[in-house]
Length: 209
Image (cartoon, rainbow, N blue to C red; front, side, top):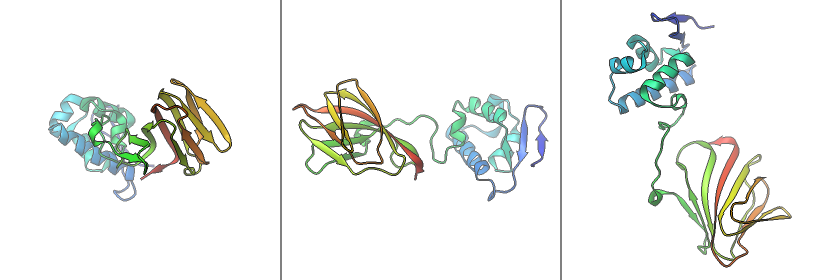
């Protein structure tokens, strides 16, 4: 077990990190702390004042020499006004990301009848994806199935949609939703002559990079 170090307050406990190579979580916390602090133009002294964590402790965490306790990490997060999760993320994400519609990544079928718009940062590692789907009247979009364990949760926002999962068919009106395993063949069909709009959450069994 690592040694516990005290920096003047009983609740500010650090766990000695074994090494930069053997402690990827500690290094992730360190790099995110440096990024978040720099983005807010805060010195170590400034962050110490707003978080209540000593400058020496912050310097040890940021250099990767020590891993903070959850209590200390919560104090730093409050000082920086971010979620604790922002320190554990492996991408540059502060807890808020605005995605302008004009910059969204879109997938359009060859005939233009199906449009899928990503409502998440597409270029980041992820396990959950969120899409806006638009399907023209009387159009169908087929999928052979995704990776094992993948689930799709869809809600119809406008119009009607028929969801086919293998040999079963489910007709959804506006406001209806469906959850199903999408690791099997499935299809979206618009039985009406007006455009259908739906929102889809795809959850993978494993994180995508």
